[in-house]
Image 1 (cartoon, rainbow, N blue to C red):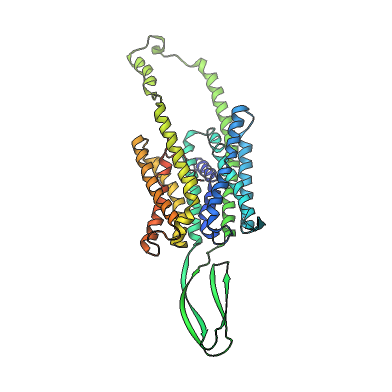
Image 2 (image 1 turned 90 degrees about the horizontal axis):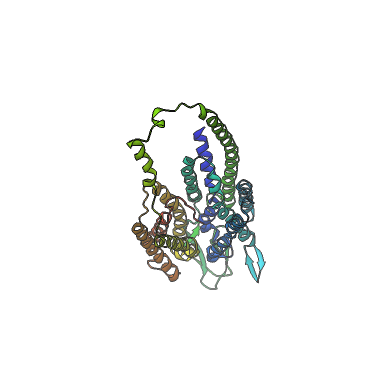
Length: 424
């Protein structure tokens, strides 16, 4: 029974950020298909930040109207909206509309807002519900929250989006008259094929190499359906957890009632009647010694500024320029950077659970290292489309390594190091 409860809690935690993380790791395939192109990550960053209106409203309602909101119906609504939005994504992700003189993915951006609203709101609703459960389930919840980034990344790696190959292409050119050449682009795979019609005269064949996109092992439709399945599993897990929570409340009430009944007939020991001895006096002095000294205001200010800086860098600035930083090295580099970055976050949170370190100098060193790696990624984005070592395998290896390493220290920042793996 305990194992089943841990499994339900882990699945429930997985639904916190699985939708948005899944959307980010699918970007290498979506960038080549949607009309926004390289601007798509910038649009997504703005839309996701606008969705923070959800947790802001809930916080204000809790402050000005305490008790007016219950976490349970809000969580059911949030998970239901997330499941429906992921399902609609599967069928509407490539639907475009003519707006302001051009085609735009309006349906894609609107659904992204609802997914972001779901995931951002989970930060202020899931944890209050978890506070009702026994405390030893909290670690399992954060493990599930880390899986919300790991599982979509593994699915994206299995999908194989963004891979290219070189093929031999034979072209025919006339010697007496120039042939009429028509190029037809296969937009579904990003491949170009050349159709040649000979007008007259002799023709010569020219063979050259062309890069072509390999088709993904499965389409974005299947990927988003898998995301909707994960959200549905989270909804079902919460349904069963809610029923177990009611059972725990009933058991706690029965236990308290039995304690109240048994307390008057509990025999008193002799030492309870006499004056406290040295051992009792020592025990009475232990709780004050175990209390933690209040944190200094300067220390708190430094920690909160550090958290604000790291979140601004990893959730706002760098994701919006990842296309410019990576795609100049090829779709393979972009694909691996996006998926490995999503996997680095839960890995760092997992390690911080076993190797906790809340030393301010250590946090400062991590922040400096992460900022240095982020500066390199930003520099490559500024130099796009001609970054350093473009066309060399060393440049691809470096950019693929820099993105996961830059995001790896992020979860260790702040006073609750390793307690929140959320990456929006």
